[in-house]
Image 1 (cartoon, one colour):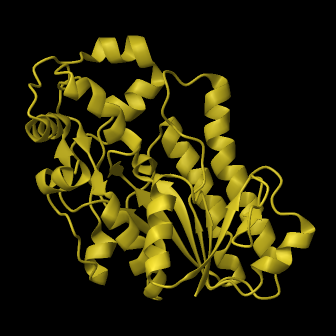
Image 2 (image 1 turned 90 degrees about the vertical axis):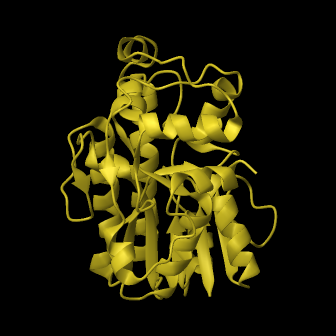
Image 3 (image 1 turned 60 degrees about the horizontal axis):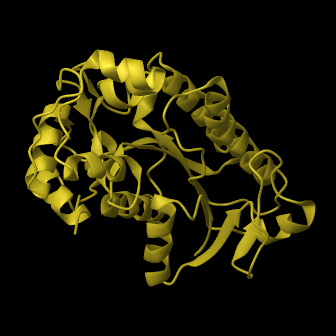
Length: 299
């Protein structure tokens, strides 16, 4: 099996590369950088692949598209929001345009998306059949997925991987939380009642491998653990693993004052997502409950 990966140097991409190497899969790694060996190919999200490089994409078994501008930061300026949108929508468009020019197209296209698709939905439980929300991230995910679905028109099995909060001490939301929690100044954010849909890094990689190998799976797939938790529950569990108090709350007004729209989206919005399609397909999660997942992530 020969697989092209974009975003291969990111948190998920790095773990996926390790897993695929262990399975003996052939990989082609797309990035902006000048290729340093034959495993690498140059790709720009805004302009795509050079004509002379397209031949290397012929006959791929799969493409796993993970590239995208980080959504974290102090605040979302107009420039940052444009970068978030363009890196996903335009980046996916250039991948699809490359597919259209191939004689032998990939068999499967796994395109990143996010649980942000559902937006702020309170206590309502979301599965893959639910519609998109109306937040900035929801709109980005809708456009992102619409570009990805163009691969279906070419006869390519297409999977939209709606990933939740990935647990890893090496990156993502958890890594950002660790410093204040270790200093004993971590605490509940806002009301603490907002839902957090999390997933272990091991399971994200496991899910991608599962999807690669199961030809019946297509369309949206929620890459989240079966048991989402509230912010208050997450805070308590993380404090327990770090042996630190979690008594200093971050009020909603302070979140809005410091982080603006980004704070609403990443800290206050409530998204309770379940992996209905994965469970129906028989995927066996390595971590279904938060406490052992955190313990493993922090090792």
